[in-house]
Image: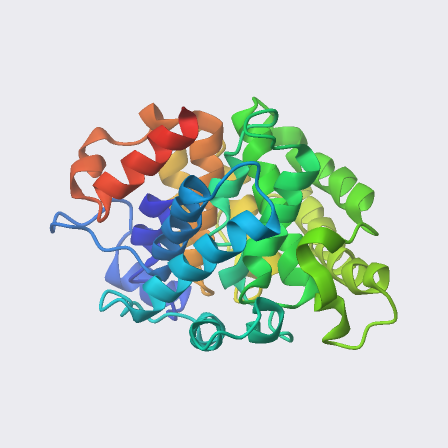
Length: 326
């Protein structure tokens, strides 16, 4: 996750032509030799989610997880290191959380920005059957961490799908069949509203019912997953991936384009994040997600060993990974 984030950090907001001009011949392919190699708010917020999971009492419930997540998000927002062009949705929602508003009033109800799912990877590493975690509670946690800042149903569904994809790959799922498994999962979850976790959130956009609220999010995700399926059938490794599945500024497109880049090179993680970083959209978030999927599939040993010594937050990342492994 952090490797992809770092590789895409300097290419965000640039056209593919400009990226290739700055990083010939085909875009960035190696982490900087500077120390440390800086990441963005994507990795910072993923650390916040993961570390909140570690300190929360188990079994996870909204009562045990809300305060750790709230505290971690506020601490990130107020940190002097929060200087990596963070998204305005996250900033505004964290400001409201710091004022003591209930989370469902603090969240930005119309936002489905990619900030909801760029940080959800640690949730996908929660093990079913440990500390009372079930498949449904893991899905609810993925949606809940998104909902604290991004209240749009598509943000919730995309975060859920991202966590599900990571869990699937960690469990040995074949990348080739992953899009179909995600479509099946989305269809199975389409009308499930996690009332115990999400409470009155569905009322903010004045939806007709909780089910109608969440169905909108799953339907938008299913639409982009269909675009992903077409893109895979017509695989084009040379063109900008954003042309096929979206620029990634919004949650469902970040998921799909990150997956597309991973599925272009499922056994070559460096090429996957290079393709993601060489894109015209939200390159760091797309590469962050592509790196998350590649890491879930291939494990830590697949990455260049030298990168570990250079990446920012190395100690926190390793400590979080070890704890979730254990």
